Image (cartoon, rainbow, N blue to C red; front, side, top):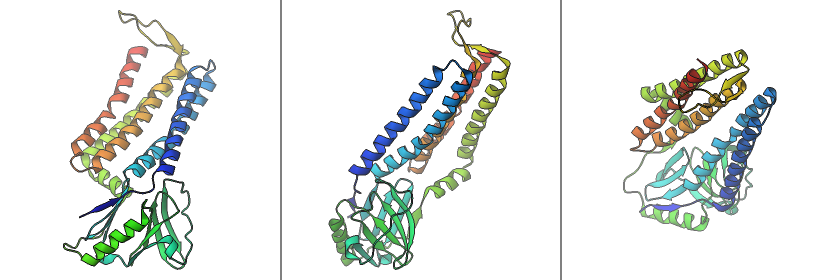
Length: 298
């Protein structure tokens, strides 16, 4: 039987959820501030700042989701580590020892750019060699040693994890398994090799860029543009022409969301068709906005 152990969740989940809400709030505030600016230069400045503020949003959201879904599993065949797009399967025969950090006579430095809830990365230790951290905290770690490297993980109940491993090792393996290591680079390579997925993603990117180019050519030629129609289809409201930048801005934001969501479905077994639909949906927004521009301007 396979036993699952969850990492320490609460501190990291609270930190990442708070950071996600803060980032989204900043993006929303900057967009509202941009829309309220009477000066064209300040509108563009705040819009660019909101786009920059959006950059950490998908990263934080991914790390939060990875933390909430992470687990360490033990069976008679080996140990499985799942953390977001990172997946590691270690055969029981390849594991030299499993110990709590407090039981080893060495101190472990923390990987760079690690925060509570996402202590990830590899360091080279003078005594233990390469150590890959796949944990939610740098406290109360559990170490899994293999001939190639040492894995530092953070099950909430470290002692129970070690006891479960010892019992599984004593019983022995029934059906030996092969070591397997998958990461984000493997998913990117799979998407690039898939002709349909690659075509949909690149088409969406090209359309979003084309939308930005079209808008950048239109803005200098007009002071104002119509926004809104009467019931019979006549334009009645006008706004500064730089407001058109909102269209490629929203298109790029949704493109990032669609690619991230599509990649998530693509990786899950049995959801490949759903991933294609999500990638295809990334084409709808830029095409719709190009149609809107044609109606408003041409």
